[in-house]
Image 1 (cartoon, rainbow, N blue to C red):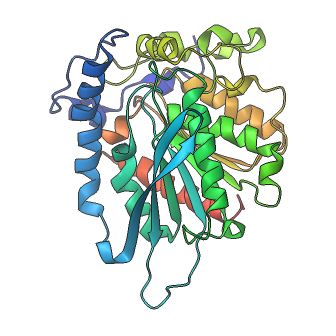
Image 2 (image 1 turned 180 degrees about the horizontal axis):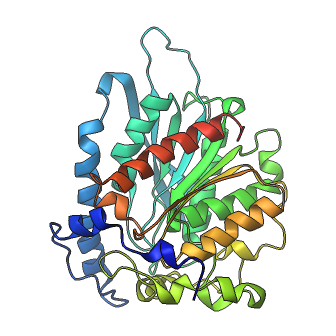
Length: 339
């Protein structure tokens, strides 16, 4: 019996919403990755875009530009957004560098594109969204290295992006993207490249923080959710194990399992969103605590009775609306330095 059992009691409004959503077969496949990706795009990405479309700001209020940037053994696309306030052509803005979710094997620029356009205008923030290469064709650490190269490119090209990193330099992502953001925060902390232009905040939505086979023994009694909760219509431990297998990272490598870094001291403030019936729940809660114990400013929001990524499918529910508003509040908190 866990003192977190209450978090797994289903949210009745979200449960009712599921009755009206035609979920496809979500049994993961480690073999037919093309079909699995097509299914993900048709269901998850298309739904997220449909939900976000009514909130798109006028095209006159921002600009969009894709760039091909060099990475190891190839190139990737970054999509760059910048506000265009009337009469302020030379204005500069804080920067948000974003890594999408999808278990390191699904997703792309389109996944969060419309949401990020709204964020760009509402918060007057430049945004770079990176299309890192996906596993299993490009296993660990390719996607991570692609994202990190994109982050360095954005840093070097801040003026091109109408960004001023002294006004704020945030990195963020959802799920596997949250994992990449957490790892990149650690990488950048000790990288001389970022001297004088350090990351100032982390946005970690439902992040992956530790491979279940590498859970530290001393915390195992509180790391129960991977095996005890999950929604087959969204994400279960089985789905996550397939993603880990495709990703191909050593379980104990902190660049796969950032919870395992020996220290988190000196990291920028972190905002985390965690769902009650998400298998990743307990590791994310522990990660937030370890950050806090190492002196990192944190802001945590937990959503009882809902699963991993629920907000992208049941957007009209109170819990999903709170999730969306909390994201905005968390972004604002980070732009204020975690004050």
